[in-house]
Image 1 (cartoon, helix red, strand yellow):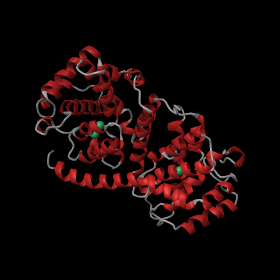
Image 2 (tube, helix red, strand yellow; image 1 turned 135 degrees about the horizontal axis):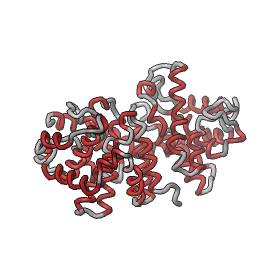
Image 3 (tube, protein in one colour; image 1 turned 90 degrees about the horizontal axis):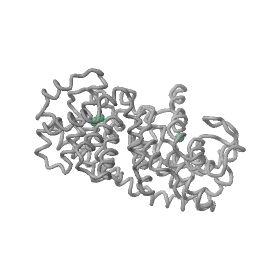
Image 4 (cartoon, helix red, strand yellow; image 1 turned 180 degrees about the vertical axis):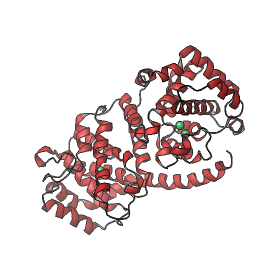
Length: 418
Ligand SMILES: [Fe+2]
Ligand SMILES: [Fe+2]
Ligand SMILES: [Fe+2]
């Protein structure tokens, strides 16, 4: 069943990336546009290769979710660009269908004269990406940059002569800079991404990568989404939902907290009860999930995703719906989300034991907040549900631990290079 189109997977990624920081709006898109045009001009690569490189360029700053180094990143001369480059590399390598493109992201800020010594498998593309990225950073600062002067100054140091030449010729023929300046590049980029065809597995992998990159920002949310998906999948199975309903529940669960990209990490990590003002910011993630997903995903999935904090008695958010508005899949996700939060470690609490979890959800059910049948099912099959969680989180948890080790190793190794 085709639950989401390839184009809309890309659209969700684009929209989410644009929410990282106001200063980076459309940055990934412009960089991928510049790279795409350079490759097109060169006429050396297949269409499939060009599309893969273009998507890689779109994702090049995905590691910037993880840390607060944006100030540095958007200056031309930066002293530490490694953190987001390494995170981005690790996300691509371990969590995306673009694993063999990951070195492009790792080296996208490395000066040409060092890069050329490193035996990077995609040296040329990494060099193109570096130039495309810096061109856009310059355009973000001023619309009237003297690129010729800049290229003269940095030729053979930051960028190779060949890369600069390719850009100049491509710009002359394909009007890259003027299309960016007058914003027509966005339309063109839409048409480029329309050609992409992902397999169903690739679609899920890209969406998962996006969700991990959001959850991995904090130790306290690392496994939240994947645990929620696992619990929802298992309850859906036990309650014998049909294939379509189980499928949309799965995707609704996967995407439910995507709006948390806009929740500041200090709020996710506050070691105490949130103030009313902070709570408001926290609750806003549901609006943001709706904002990101609404044009790109089937309405059934959207409604599952954005109703996960609604309560049967109308005391939830964000629309204060009541039981009559909430179908079984939406009710399952609400329960799965609570169990996942209770079983996970949070800044303000440790993981809860089985009895405590069951106690809390039973009380919520008795108070008319969450669905009694679903709670009954969760209580009865709790061990099976948790076995499934253990199976589903085993690999991602290992990847996360591995990524942390690899991050430190790579950082030590690479920091001295630039
Ligand atoms: Fe970057
Ligand atoms: Fe960038
Ligand atoms: Fe949520």
